[in-house]
Image (cartoon, one colour):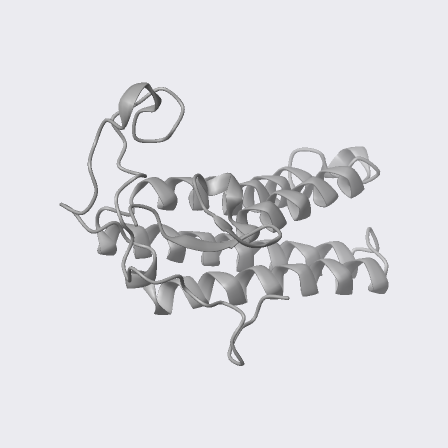
Length: 179
């Protein structure tokens, strides 16, 4: 099998791009919630707290996208995942500032904080088991007809290469942090 089946948005699906990763989807959703709630913050926070929390929340998904494309090199992949984890934790700190400043009520801040706890747990799972996600060089073939490596016009990427390990990563085991 040239692509591993992995955990996507709705259970066992092929993960073809970073957008298929549940953790990326959850990071995007959380960033959009933050964007929405910060629209109601005071104008004097526009270039400070609002800017900081929006940047860090968006950076989680953005760094995860970069990590996905760096799967050829385990160290680079893990480094980008560590950046994601750091940005998620920074976002939690800004959430706490928002709560203490009275811009978020305790329920809102708790819900956002829990979302980021879940995102961080998923990132840590990937960080502690990078071999399940990295691309093994030499397995699989480039240029699968007109579809190319990504199945959308061949950008030379190696998404069609087998991922290590060759069996699907079971993220629904008893140690799983995902629902």
